[in-house]
Length: 454
Image 1 (spheres, rainbow, N blue to C red):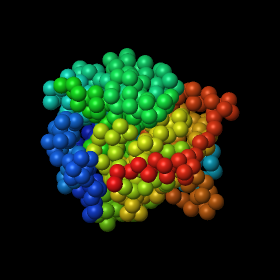
Image 2 (image 1 turned 30 degrees about the vertical axis):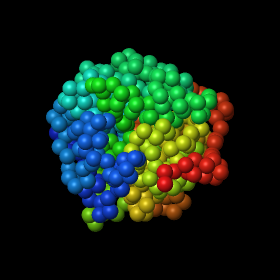
Image 3 (image 1 turned 90 degrees about the vertical axis):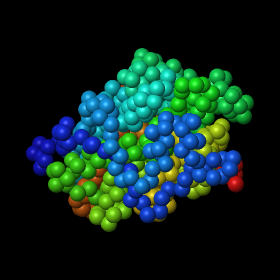
Image 4 (image 1 turned 45 degrees about the horizontal axis):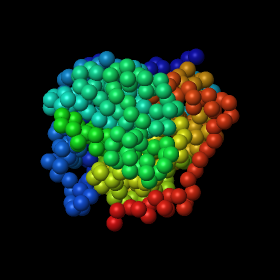
């Protein structure tokens, strides 16, 4: 097949970013601050430092510095798998018969299998540097827990992972990878924390949610000296670390003379979408360029497309600060589908504010159509994608088909956040015709939103 440019638009090791990009610095209207649920006042650095490592708390509150230097110890770790390739999907273009040019930023080329390692290594580094004994966290599908277990093993600190119960049961191999790297993995909600016991009493037999697991992880951290809590999505510090994805994508496109028209990412809490689009959004905010941005979420947990923009608790147990975000209500327990990494009731405050300003589009898609897109992508491009990533694949393919119908040549870029080789039970259900779609009713969402803090 004759190609106009290489399959892989590669950067060299010397082109690895030196700094993370902080999109908040370029936002005229900043995301609303986190609030103390007791006083309803913005949380302070001192308060956040009781839960997070001090340097991470500073990053969480920083909305003025456009660039924050990446410590050399983190860049040294990044060099093991970064820069990550930006791939021209020639075979997918041919299969779709589209004139569109499709590119995907592949973040699955590390042992954890996803983009999560970009922030995990940063958070483990700051915990080790501060002299902490270990960290606690939650994980949905398991990508974040896997990445954090690797990072903690690298810096020789403890790692306790509260894994959403349905994923703990559906993805045993992901769980065993975490344990192999030294993590202690607990199905959530559990009887090991006060929050877990309360949730089990309130929702008997629940399959859990990220909101539940967050409550347990935070309680576990703050109740033990020498431990801090770390989070794999939603928070501003995480989107900051993940900006290496967008910075590399931006540099690769510029290097090969390509201008993106539409940039697409799956959206659960917002880490990979925010990381991918932030540098490009900065260009838009500074009046330097125009792009279309599309966030893709599961129809079973549609925080952007059906949620409310309001202050809400970040966790089901209501022990975390209040964040202004698009939310389905902290008590919303998503259906136990196979996209565990997107089963969160709210969206990043940064992305929520940008969406509220009309700078991002949002679409929700059903589980079965997502897996059909994943199957078509795998057959064309030879990579088995994670179910989460396949949401972006579905919409990228839809956009490419529209170009086929209109004859327009557009450059479509999407984030392939990870591989699906630990998600074979989900693929088995899809291939056997047993997978179903679940969409919450308006009444279900209304009941959950009725409990929003006043």
